[in-house]
Image (tube, rainbow, N blue to C red):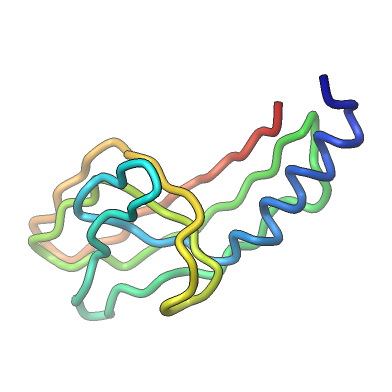
Length: 114
């Protein structure tokens, strides 16, 4: 069992590595990212993340708001080491949301080290 301090250190390290978030039109599976959203005006782009300072009970949180083009359906999200390219680190399904018109999607990410 990890100490509280170790859990907090590991959660902070996770946030320091996962610097950017992306949205996917398909759900990520295991170590494979989903299909990233493209297009729109304003154009979709990955977002830089600002994680909470320090870790509370081994948890860190970040929030990002994305521009999503008409016709896209957001089905997943992922974390990367860069705004373009970079290394895919983690991902998950999200509550699916279809966009009939250009809109925004707000993603809140919480990582908890057990």
